[in-house]
Length: 224
Image 1 (cartoon, rainbow, N blue to C red):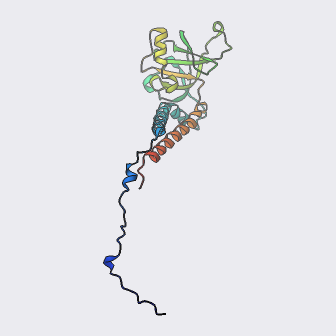
Image 2 (image 1 turned 90 degrees about the horizontal axis):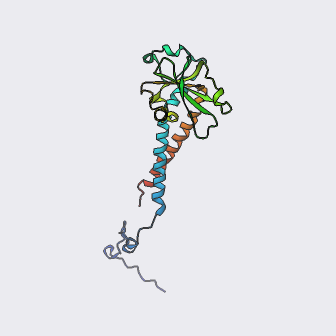
Image 3 (image 1 turned 90 degrees about the vertical axis):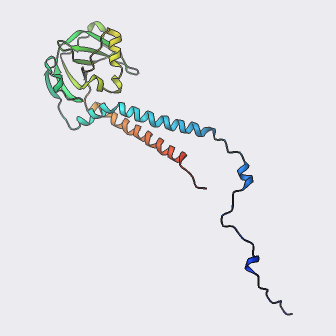
C-alpha cells in the first residue's frame, strides 16, 4: 500500500513558544504568605549582635590588661602609693605598692559573689583608691587591711564593666565620689586571673558574627 507523501509545513504556521512566559495572573492574585516569626527572628538577631558588641566593648579594658601582662612574671614595683605621680602611671598595669588606707571605706558586694569588697582611699593621696576582696568568713570588727597590695592599676573611668557604677555607688554611700582622674588599684587581680575574659570575648564575637550572618541569610535578595 503506497504511503502518502509528506507535506511540507510553512514555518510561519507553526505555534510560537515564548522563551520567557509572563507571570501567572492567578498566582499573583494569591495573598502573600504570613511570616509571623520572621520579624521575631530579625529582632533577636539584631539584639544579639548589638548586645554582644556592646559587652565586648565594655570588657576591652580587662582584655588589654590580660594581654599587657602576657609573659610578665613579676608586677611593677611602685613603692609607696601615697608618693605616686598620677601623670606617670600607665593604665592596665600589674603593680605592687605599699600604703596606709584611710579609715573611711565603702563596703559592697557583687551578685553571685560570696565575698564582699572594700574600697578605701590611700591615706594622704586623694587620687589613688584600693579595692580589697574580703572573704565572707571575716567578721567586720576583726578585719584589718593589709599594708601592701598587688593587682591591676587602672583609672576609674577605664576600669571596665565590673566597676562601671562604682563611682556612683561611692557617692551615694559617702556623699563624695572620687574624681574622674582618680586611679584604682584592684588588689588580687593578676593578668593570669583576668585571662578568662579572652574566652568571653571570643564567644561574644562568635555570637555577633553568627547574628550578622543570619541577618544576611534572611534579608538577602533571592532569585525568582
